Amino acid sequence: MNTLSRSFVRGVDAANRRLGRLVMYGIFVLIAILLWSSISKTFFLPSLWTLEMAQFAMVAYYMLGGPYSIQLGSNVRMDLFYGGWPDRRKAWFDAFTVAFLIFYLGVLLYGGISSTNYAIEYSERSYSAWRPYMWPIKIIMCAGILLMILQALSEFLKDIARIRGEDI
Image (tube, rainbow, N blue to C red; front, side, top):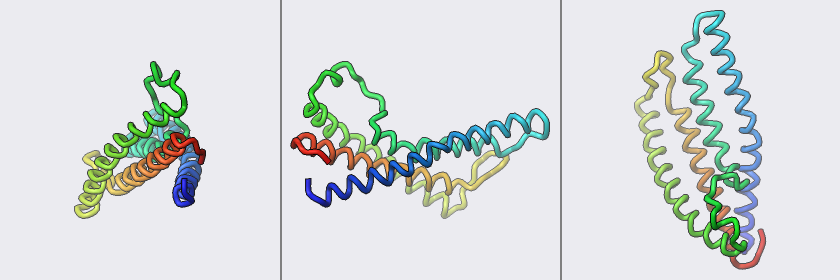
């Protein structure tokens, strides 16, 4: 692998590792929102914003934590045959299947950018009683998808290196 590829892999992996470790604590934000929702419904007037804010927190948690999950290899695999294969065969298979992942994420990003542009241009709001603007969560979703594409490219370069017998 050349130095440009190594630098790309190290940079993307480092950025997604840091962001993933930070976002992993977002579950506590979600717990706090849902706890406040329960307390306010029991002792005070119910809050209008808690359910939707919990949904937004969950979206941010999953979308920004996705690249770190890809990096750790904690995605779900059908291990019926894959587990017994040698490392080079696994690398060939992973390099082949990551192309489908990148295509899917590219289509998702294209649609996400279009939807985000619409939300910004027309000041799109949710249809709930709280009516928050939709562009902040759509920007977070697009950023998460872009980071997943970069991480998938990093994994592809690592697979190519494994096929060649190198290590990054």
